[in-house]
Image (cartoon, rainbow, N blue to C red; front, top):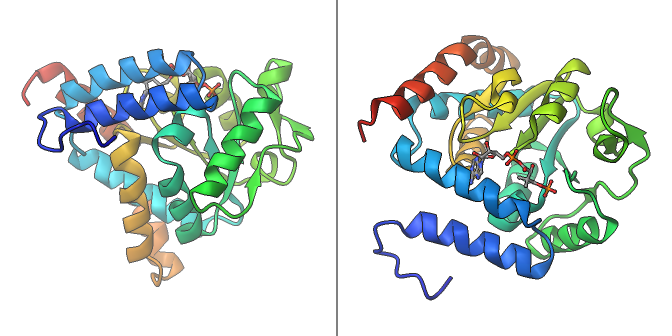
Amino acid sequence: EEEIPEDHPRYQDLLTRHRIEKGVEKGITHLQGMHAEGRGSAFDYLLGEETIPSADAAERAAAAHLLLADRPVLSINGNVAALVPGEMAELADATGADLEVNLFNRTEERIRAIADHLREHGAEDVKGLEADARIPNLDHQRAKVDEDGIYAADVVLVPLEDGDRAEALNEMGKTEIVIDLNPLSRSPQVADVPIVDNIIRAVPNVTAHARELADADESELEAIVEEFDREAALEEAEDRIRSGEL
Ligand code: PTJ
């Protein structure tokens, strides 16, 4: 990361790519994660590489949901672990959420490597190693979750998630928060709170909102949740991408 000059016009993009490459080298990120990163990078370019107002509103609604939740869980895959390990630990701390490693391309080895990586970045308790419950209506390997983690959660944050799993979690009746730069992909389309923003900007901003709302009473948090308009957020992101106005 030291090799990338901070004044480079595409600094954030280069940093992101570099972190994914390192993640692959360390065995925490799947090779497919590089393709996912490439797709994300293209959408971020079209968004102007900034948090658009509707994404900020989604990030505030996400913070309110996490603070209102009885059992909030933040799901971690190989890309999330490479890009924002410390930031996810901070968000867990700010909202009282659990962290759970949950992989699309599941191997025990990678789960353990990611859990270690998260702990090196300040995470205390990391779930995902038990895998003693299943998400209904999903392929066996991809359905594995912790009974006292994602399975029992009422609110889940699933960044960069596969569409089938996003849909299956939604069918379980969970409140689902998705971070995905492509507003047309299935995960944000089924999410209660679709955050169309780069995870690198999104997670610290959800944490900032959560800290600011730490002393808010329940009615204030509920009003934020009520006011958030998911359709409008998806539409605003798509309009921004299609307009070509940066
Ligand atoms: O570590 P694993 O095994 O769980 O695998 C994780 C990946 C991401 C490889 C897997 O879930 C996958 O293949 O995902 P997809 O179907 O490529 O979806 C990833 C989505 O995340 C795409 O819509 C990308 O546009 C989006 N995306 C990529 N990078 C970012 C992003 N969204 C926000 N911030 C990013 N930095």
